[in-house]
Length: 109
Image (cartoon, rainbow, N blue to C red):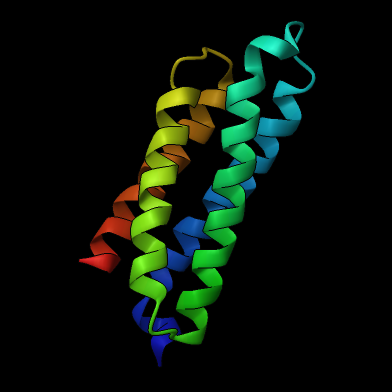
């Protein structure tokens, strides 16, 4: 079953999507929201591609590897941006994004 084969990557994608949702919502509560605009936008992009990738893997789609390669790139970009901010929600999001990028790269290899 494809789902079992990709279980750790699916879990990483779902955890990353949740971390990104929380980070975006938390960034919207920051004093200088405009300064957080790129972080928020990347959080939203990352959460969406992670959910998409998890779905493709769960279905065993022939396109899962291609989606996961793209997901890894977006997760890395989000991790890099979140890592620039010292707030705990950004640091936690960066860690989740890095883990997801690693899992997606491994899955797509």
